[in-house]
Picture 1 (cartoon, rainbow, N blue to C red):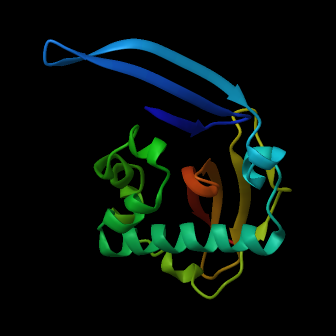
Picture 2 (tube, rainbow, N blue to C red; picture 1 turned 180 degrees about the horizontal axis):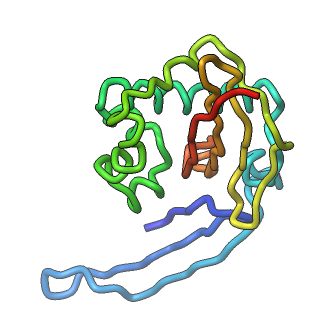
Length: 171
């Protein structure tokens, strides 16, 4: 068997050899090495490059809209399927709902963000864990929706990996 895993900052290549002995496949050899990806470049996110502003807005809007719809419908299926697979291994749909129960229980609608552009309060950055961090707010009425979104690079795409969302009265 030959294959590879695209990892950061390199690609992990492997060759695994088996022989058939007594009707069973037996491992006889493993070869593993790492190298720079073909062409010497990695996807932008893996190079720790911040996407352009318009892509940051799209990432934010997509994630926040799915989150708002999940709260509104009290159904986290679509939102859950949109988050990073690595995060799905660490959290369930029920745990996501628990984190947002205050909005559901108090009937606080987050759908007021739809059609409103986010305003970033900090410059987007990559943290020490390699997560793209976006902080800001939606200047909506009667309350503003503030957010901190963490994105993980998965398959050369930024996928939601964590969030903090709350509302506050505008100043």
